[in-house]
Amino acid sequence: MTLQTDNSKPQSRFSGVLLVMGILLIAANLRAPFTGIAPVLEQIIDHYTLSGSQAGFITTLPLIAFAIISPMAAMFARRQGLEQSLFVALILILLGILARFIDSSTMLFVGTAVIGVGIAIANVLLPSLIKRDFATKVALITSAYVLTMGIASGGFSALVFPLSQFNGLGWQLALGSSAMLTVAGLIVWTAQLGKHTKPASMSQFAPSSKSVWRYLLAWQITLLLGLNSFLTYIILAWLPSILTDTGHSAVEAGAYHGAFQIATALPGLVLIPLLAKLKDQSALSFILGLLSASSAIGLLYMPGFAFFWTIMLGFCSGGCFILGLSFISLRTDDPHQAASLSGMSQSVGYLLAAIGPMMAGALHTSTGSWEAPLWLCIIAALLCALCGFGGGRNTTLDKSVS
Image 1 (cartoon, rainbow, N blue to C red):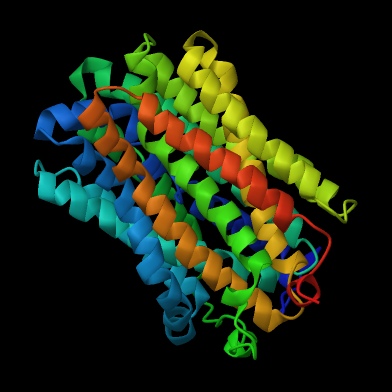
Image 2: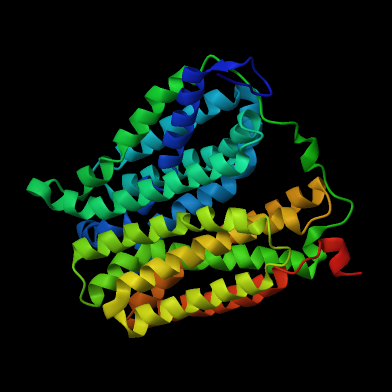
């Protein structure tokens, strides 16, 4: 059996298996190195005497890197090739992890930023590689890598606090243990370095004759993704702190934080086949937004059922993310519009995602309570429901104004 790609000769079964393993190992590195900070964030705050805003900025740094580096990743790959660029991305992630071993708050921020740069490059280029080598199985491979990303980040979040307490290992070594995944990815990915393929032609990203920024439907889709990211990254940054303040142990908080991330990946198994059957997704989007708001209310007023609320919040957050990404293709009239809407939603989405953790941290510092940050999540979820109801209509940008 062989694997035929668009830009290369047929590969052997073993080569195909190595490629899939490499993709999944890259995916395993796209969240864990920075989302694993949250369960040990209180230790980091105490160690470096950080304010709430500074602590939130640690989670925000990778998002800023995404916004700055993402547009450059394709240009880098066109010069160096997809395979070498993804290898460089893994090296940057490893260097960022190692930088955080240095006992300096400056190096903590620098290392996290470098991790963000590496993740940004891989985030942009991995889908291009999947489209090239698995043109007929894009949904399957994408679902597999999203699920792997969720399991790896969730599992690491669940383990990082117990690791920090094991034989006095400490938070730095516990966080640094994620380097094992990175090293494994680098070793397996060396099999791809003999290739030098470039991403698909950039002609599809030529400017459209009409700006997507003037469509209400485009704003509904953009805000669905942006507000959902705002909520998600507040939870990723602060959920363990919220839970420990409401009486849960640090081990439980880390486990719940891990469960949240795994739950965000699960909707892919349900929604991808469902989307092929549903022409109008308004009701589904609205319900997911309402359930997100209900889960945040549950965390605030019924913390005893935190595990249920966490799983529900993660599932709904992941569901809204998948729907929003799908709407970029479903609601546009041509590839130019799709590329423009993707750029619009990413720029606004990363901005909102970056603001969220810092705003929540500042509110907690000023009020001494998690009530205001959780109400931010509730409001964001309700707005997601409204935007999802509009964005889920069975129409396209041009038809929506006719």
